[in-house]
Length: 267
Image 1 (tube, one colour):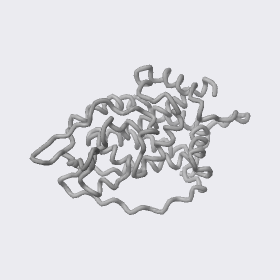
Image 2 (cartoon, rainbow, N blue to C red):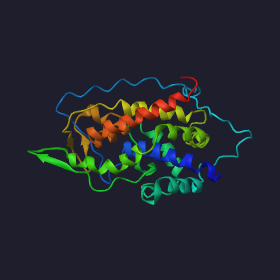
Image 3 (cartoon, one colour):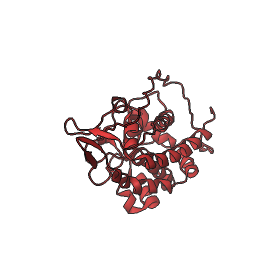
Image 4 (cartoon, rainbow, N blue to C red):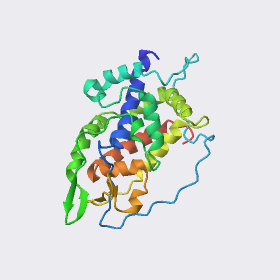
């Protein structure tokens, strides 16, 4: 992959990576949290039938298709991708990313977020710093509002990326993500469909008034409310960042979703 493709792939990482990790929120270096709210919690929507993977619902069409066939794409070669990230976001932000299997980590995370579990071992970005904090009140625990500050630097990086420019670049490099997705175990699947589904799942995260109560049955924290605990990994991670940060993240996700659909002739 030549240097002309560095920025597209780099920016994709920042968005999908930051969005799905920062926004989605990098897991804290300690137990994941689960919360309960004093107010009634919206019921989890019943599972919908899985769409037919062979039907491409959100096709991506390049604005300027190459005149000649593109060379084979290798999702394992992160060299150009890493160099592009360095040029785009600088060494400080680049240090947020794991240096190995960068493309495959990003694709796997997008695929996992709508599921109940999103293994940390395939996350593209390192956990946010510092321990997860809780407040204790007469035998109960709630999420400490101070945790919100831990996510601000990631959201600031994401907010600096223009959604239109991001998606322009995403479209130009879509084949590499599609290849990695098919090699993940979906030979007839379409990565852009999964990306839109993941965004929709995140946008469906309920807005719950704090404080969020948590329990710690063993090592890990969990949402005391079983309905919240059954939500997707992406939604639970989004809830952890705090109401204000979640609202900000949703605005960014809506903008990116709109740009994605504007490039899909089916929509």
